Image (cartoon, rainbow, N blue to C red; front, side):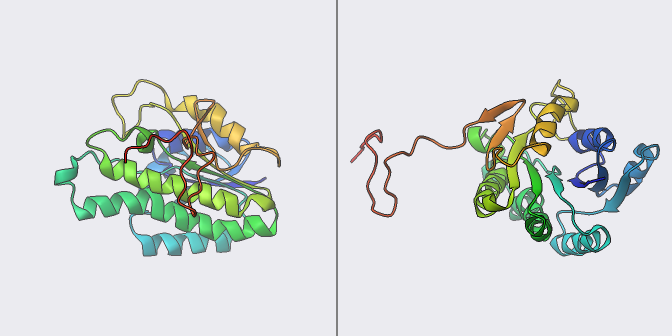
Length: 243
């Protein structure tokens, strides 16, 4: 049975994923609240539980090293855990900004870097980095969240291009406006993202990589930049001239 590593499994989307994927995968479930996972997953087979705090970079590295040592090649990865800091930019503290980047971008990058060598060696890997529409709409009051998810988006797309020749698919997915501890006012059940998750885990070798998916749809990430010569400093014809 193939192994899948999922972060943030104590609640919300991660909890739904762990509960639904154990029929087909050995789930390596990680989160800060180990006791909560042990209680909720006690009836499940094919699951291993680890405690991890993604805000602590050094602890994250140590735990991931132990996971790789104990489980070796892990072909599937879902970086799901995240933190949403709602604070106006003028009041946003450095520690809040750093926390958002550590949890939402830096630790997911560390996990990817630990798993990618095994995926490359086996010429197979499927990675889903859970993102949001926040970096695209940049709502007021969410600078830390939007910026950290934007960093995750860029890292994901860059990595997808570097590993495209190894049958490794690295994609972004937003679960949609689902009700979780981060978004208690939302109405949709987190399970609405399951079909999109299954689609991305089951991608064939010629499937998409470096793309953004949301509720069964591919979301465009970039403007039309055809004709732009960045290194030559030449704009395209469709750019509006202001000087």
